[in-house]
Amino acid sequence: MSEPDFPAADTRRANAAETEFSAADIRVAAMNLLARREHSLGELRQKLQRRFDAPAMLETQLQKLVEENLQSDDRVAESFARQRAGRGYGPARVRQAMREKNLSDIAIARAFESAELDWWALAENAFRKKFGEPGRVELKEKARRIRFMQYRGFSADHYEHLLGD
Image (cartoon, rainbow, N blue to C red; front, side, top):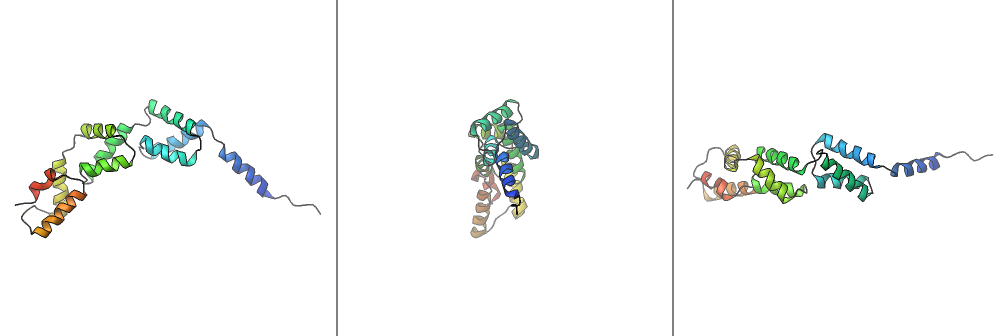
């Protein structure tokens, strides 16, 4: 009796072939990620490093995307700043979230400058949405309102006029 052929050997060879990749594979994967939404260079690098174990080839492809303006940290930063400000977050909270996205302080500063956001108006909108009309309240309630505004990332300058007193 002859031994039956087992497909396990073929599967192992196929898996070994899958681990080999080219620069084009990295570029396609990066373009697919960028097609869904803008990614910072750091985010893109992090996601691609999980899939591809070729740091030099990965960096080369990322630099090509930057040179071709297909990836731009400035564009990501400005879009993110506008989006988070529109959701009622203040500058401190937005800045921290941008740092978590691996954006540089320079890109963050440029985004804040070019977005031309009125943080006082945004603070007032967030305050009114949560608490209604500003006015005099008890000390405990005032402390709760201050904590909310600080949690949202606004400085005292942005909201102190809304607390009444």
